[in-house]
Amino acid sequence: MPFEENMEYAIQVQDVSKVYQLYDKPIDRLKESLSLSHKSYHKDFFALNGISFQVKKGETVGIIGTNGSGKSTILKIITGVLTPTSGEVKVSGVISALLELGAGFNMDYTGIENIYMNGTMMGFSRKEMEEKLSDILEFADIGDFVHQPVKTYSSGMFVRLAFALAINVEPEILIVDEALSVGDVFFQAKCYRRMEEIRKNGTTILMVTHDMGSVIKYCNRVVLLNKGHFVAEGAPGKMVDLYKKILANQMDDLEAELSAENDFSGEMVSRTGKKPEEMEPEALNGEREWAKTEQSSGGLNEIAEVKGLMKDHLTINPNRTEYGNGKAEIYDLGLFDERGNLTNLLLKGEYFTIREKIRFRAEIQAPIFTYTIKSKMGEELSGTNTMFEGADICPVKAGDGYEVNFRQKMTLQGGEYLLSMSCTGFEQGEHTVYHRLYDIANITVISNKNTVGIYDMESEVRATYQPNSGT
Image (cartoon, rainbow, N blue to C red; front, side, top):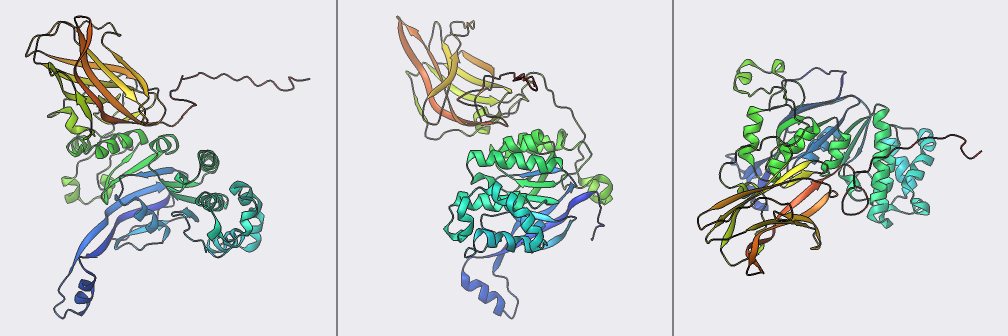
């Protein structure tokens, strides 16, 4: 059913689906087209299935989800590159889009020629593009290569020119799909600074990225997709939490949270992305409505009960190394973020808990429980044990058990790390390993501010401006 255009929104997406017909063999396509009985030889694949959301003018909205969730497809439909199978999209404003490396560029044209050609396609006159040219070239910073055919460019030069063009034509709507992942870190920082400038000037930004730090830092709101379906939309931090559950394949936990908690956007919304007043009564009866909840900002919330083993809800290394004399066994382990979610993804600056569960097969006078976090290169970055921490550990007998929780603040930079843990002790003065798990799980740290080095010293900066201090 068509919907009325609302001038409050830059982008309105309603019930959009994109279906592709998949054939087992190329000949099946011909058979289907020639079939007098209209026999179907294909299977329908829903790249998108009934997606609905809106983007207000001046908002910065992120779209996140795993590979194959439909993020790039919905951007292509919004920009007109693809036509939806069903549903409707309304856009209010001039779009500047950076979807794929090379999209809209003629490889045989020079950089200058591509600038003018793309400007014309966006509705700008040659004179208007001449006025913008110096800003575009200064931002791209590719020197005399701008006069060479773009087919001679490196991927870095290409993305510099493409992004410089997209972001310096004063767009009303900027759409970016993972384009920044190609440039170096200095160019990425330059792009984000420019995006922040145009955002403050009222440009609407819709971005797809796997960089959760950027999502949290720059987005007002986030839309979460999974396998072509709308999952939820709302506050960036909350959406990243839900995204973690999808990455860890915690679909039961995700479903429970969607039906029970629900802060998301501060409004009552449904899992179809529609507000209750926009829904038919029958559909509303079958929908779970979401009420706003407040997230605790202080300390670790109570960790929720976990069904079964904790490690079954995490990404565990199938090729881990483990050894020991068998007197103890680390039979379960967990990683919990500050909100008590069981996850491999942790936010820099937040508290997290490492939990170990150990059972004993023999009498041990003074067991020691440990964990170590290492870099991908195997360098030990941090870790501790119950002996260092002065924990009161009792002697154990066969059949006894321990649950050990290490709670600490994540100060490592954003990146990928490896977790190891062990149960050890001393017997007749000799260090003894009862059970050790090397690189048992990965830890992905999400950060919106990385400093120099391995970890962040959390500096507090105070700068006092002193005009004319040199005179």
